[in-house]
Image (cartoon, rainbow, N blue to C red; front, side, top):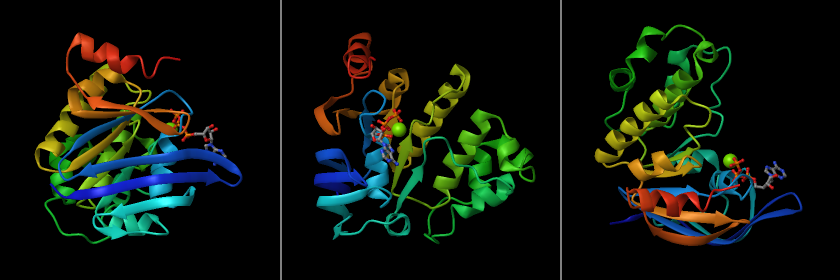
Length: 234
Ligand SMILES: Nc1ncnc2c1ncn2[C@@H]1O[C@H](COP(=O)(O)OP(=O)(O)OP(=O)(O)O)[C@@H](O)[C@H]1O
Ligand SMILES: [Mg+2]
């Protein structure tokens, strides 16, 4: 298995605020990894550091085999790392289809096209020409996932994709993530909903105060769920 992404000893900041402390993680091709932890521990900051939106002052980041001293959104995209950002970030004033096509801007070749995304989420085709932000929360999340797939990524970073969604939509997304992973795309699933973690992830990294404090195998059982929930209780 080849490494798609690695962070080693990363210290990351917003201005003077030191958020990530000596953080290391590694994701190999086809892996399904969950990054968990309660509000404010720094989960989104991990994504932001990978995208260059938080400032890395020390540590080494690799995209594939390439050491990247100054990560940027487009550099991640060029290396096959796509993001479904927290809060979805659907672009206002663009239609569903235009939002979707934005994901293809990086021009990587692969199995995903608008046609394939529409097969996965038929509702997006039905609403292709309506403004993206006119969709329901669940539909906007599907659009955000579709937009990431359009980049034909080898790894998708999903930042709390089920936040605020109805259980039936969460179930549908869990199924979609499993389908995408079964096709070989690696997932880093950031979640506070452990019922989706046990269904999708195989390995977990638990964060506290800007560091990874526990790692382990995800076990899809009552006990496994309890173990994970202990890391996100507020
Ligand atoms: N732009 C910013 N400038 C300064 N501090 C920030 C900024 N964004 C986040 N923080 C702080 O960094 C810390 C980590 O935030 P982060 O958003 O990474 O947490 P999180 O684990 O993703 O939380 P949540 O589960 O609520 O999304 C928090 O203390 C937060 O207040
Ligand atoms: Mg967050």
